[in-house]
Amino acid sequence: MSHLPPFSGDDPTCPKCGNVGASSTFSERNPRNGLWGDRLVRVCLRCGYSWDESTVDQDQEDGQGVGA
Ligand SMILES: [Zn+2]
Image (cartoon, rainbow, N blue to C red; front, side, top):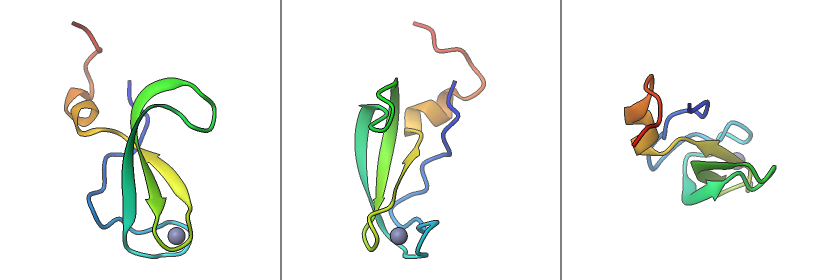
């Protein structure tokens, strides 16, 4: 069950400073609360604000349980 926003591509707009462009780092857990769950951690190249987005495979699984 992904509650993260979908991956916004290579040139997302930072919600804090409006800069276009952020790095993407895959992580298996939330760096802020330590909870497990795949995510892409985006970090704004200008101000350093970070936010999480869902991975592409999670987007494709939306609406289905995670089985297998
Ligand atoms: Zn920013």
